[in-house]
Amino acid sequence: FECLMNDRPLAAVTTEDRRKTLERVIDQTLLSEQMDASSFPHAGPENVAARIREVRDQNASWRTDEGWHRALTAFGLTQDDVAAQVAMQLDMMRFIDLRFRPNIHIDPRTVEQYYVQQLLPELRRSGAAEITLKEASPKIQEVLVQQRMDEMLTAWLRNLRQQIPVVVR
Image (cartoon, rainbow, N blue to C red; front, side):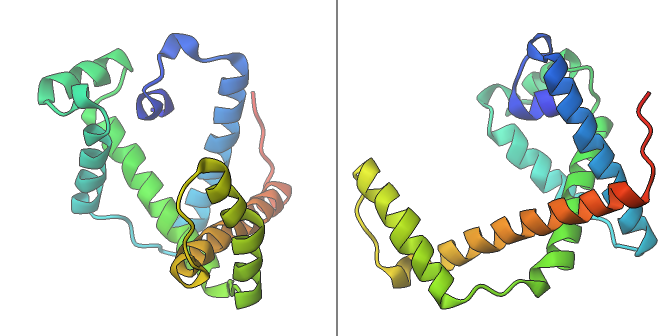
């Protein structure tokens, strides 16, 4: 599934790629157990179908049904496999967002620091037109929220792994 999403040939997968994928599967399993324990509502079929359409639209050869089915066959997947993975991803993203976002507050000073120390230098390096702090603030705030959510998720998963024994055979 990851190879399909990244349009990467299966033959290009390394041992290290497999190890990293296993780590992600373990994290997904832990998250899934947490979602099940909280009676988390799952994504509806319309959301799954919309996301699959977005995925298919990213690759010109997948836009036709024939091209999509050819890609699924090449990666050893069925439409149901993809729908199940997409549903899981949507559920996990929403679960993580609902669990962590309400506890994150980004102060204006942090937004300003990011603007001065990171955004402006990057815009100047790339030759792009500068934008004002006011224009950039909503996007900067979202970047900082996402970074903080990633940190919180990493710490939470580390804690779950310590509490729940994981055996890899």
